[in-house]
Length: 441
View 1 (cartoon, rainbow, N blue to C red):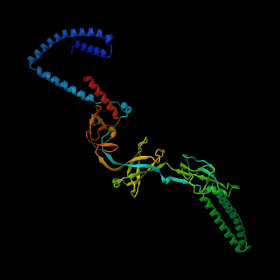
View 2 (cartoon, rainbow, N blue to C red):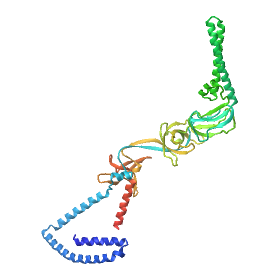
View 3 (cartoon, helix red, strand yellow):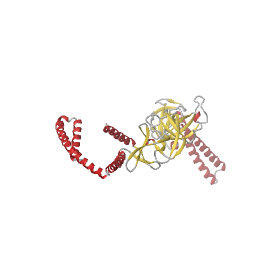
């Protein structure tokens, strides 16, 4: 191409761009004049160039090689254009770009497909870690230290009662303790007199029997205090204090948990069996599932379960620990239970859930995650990575589970593909397609 042609083409392109950008008013006339001048020069040069080409054509024709050389040269150019076009189809990204856009690679290989069945269920309190707190003694409420929703630890004081029954029990324990101390002194004296041959053996034996009875009486009074719920350290201190609080009774938490019910007010008179608190350990919960008759043979103890709440909670995994032996008459379903860890307390009792139970599994030669699959023009594709860059390829799917799909065709074992982040590549591919359409018009 001559320099005149090149200049003409460049200025013509610049003129078109400026006119499209709305700058025709400022630069249009001048560029128009330049274009006309170059066009005239082009026409003049074209005449001489055509004549020169005509003479060269005659020479080639005389030699008999014109057609062969021209066709051969054209084939080389066509082949070169095709090769460069294939290379340009691949998307190029640096490692930094891949990290920025969350693009990760994986090697195509075997995987495990898990087939699930969905069952409805409900989150419930773990009744193995639930306590109904009762005072175990009649009395009047003097103080309430625990409120609804409070977290308590084992042994924490939740309420204080004034109890006449407790006062009588403590007094009996004090009397038994003092009686034992007195009888032990008498026994030691009688024992010494008997050993010194001063008193008869009968007196010694009677003193020893009295001490044994006193110890039994003290032991019974201790057991009564234990039955009322007093801790051992409090009971052991009763006989050592000069003026213990005989009516003072403290209601304590049985274990670490959360107060989920409260039925006590200041000044209230309570019976020994009145439920005043309910404490629950919410670090684990029960998830009770309804198993339909058609699923009874496929749902078994020990199977893995994926639990979804339908609200803004992440899915949780658990294991079926129990399957009920009977089918409900009204619901016509059996009950399967999952003990679900709940360290953050996110799974609230009463929440309805859907549980996906893995009832079967199958190993396949190639499995990819669902994040690697992309629908383009109604067909499924994945992005693969080779030496030229990232390219999109159509694949044929087989069986599909919750996490991924089997690949029957389009991807080979150990071939690198985009596991996550392919949406960015899909967007780039769409941009290139759009730009190509615009240029074509």
